[in-house]
Amino acid sequence: MKATDIPENEYSVFNATYIKASGDENLYEDLEISLHDFIRFVQDIPMDKFDYRYAEGKWTIKEIIQHIIDTERIFSYRALRISRNDKTPLPGFEENDYALNTNANDRHLQSLLTELSIVRQSTLSLFKSFSEEQLKRIGIASNHEISVRAIGFIIIGHQKHHQKVYKERYL
Image (cartoon, rainbow, N blue to C red; front, side, top):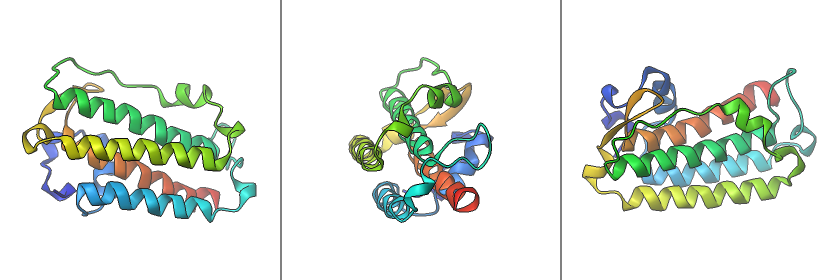
């Protein structure tokens, strides 16, 4: 399954950016490959950049890694609920509140990357456990319809989006 296989009615306009950023790879392969690419990319960033903010109020690289972890956990939870045919509308979350309430800047880089790897392996296992029917199920999250399979590609695209931001604004 590829992102281009997903009809636009399975995700919001806001999430279209992430779907497109995910590329046109197989979902399961790209969940794994994009993680390894991201870790290699981050490990090549000079150590003095991890606490850098390109502007006041912007997140550090470590805070962005924590944000990616938090977001992936939330999106995986959404995928689980929707896949199990839970019709309860799922609320959004305030990413800035999450970022203000972490200790990402006090953590070692390797600790963050290890956590990201563990979360991604869990996400990959979860998505591989879904049937074709479950992947196509649609629920409500953040007041918009979304399919389970779209969530998988959003997770990938969200990570790739932040990697692009690193290149453009931090390095």
